[in-house]
Length: 139
Image: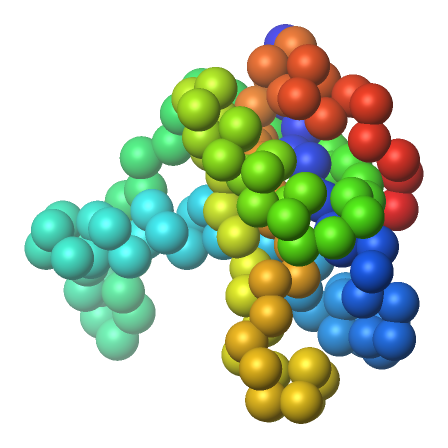
């Protein structure tokens, strides 16, 4: 299996600082694991205290386990704008892929307006992701 995660950004956000987009990429890449932790915490199923530390058990799919134990492969792609990003997100979910949106709160950019900046798809085997994203431009 060749597992990867695809990060897709909006090309129309050209005036955004490079550091902001790097921060959004970090959020985007780890969103799937953060969501799993939140869901498990909400079910009361995660926290085990060991001394002064909390240890958590996280249930990962085979693809996620392979990604974590492998190269953490990420592919950065672009779409023209928000509408295309929303459509790509919806298609990924319809295909049964893990997909998460990152919406910037607008505190340092975007004049206080929450703004969809990017999505993450996966980690999944490339054969599952490529039919959806294989034609997109590289970032």
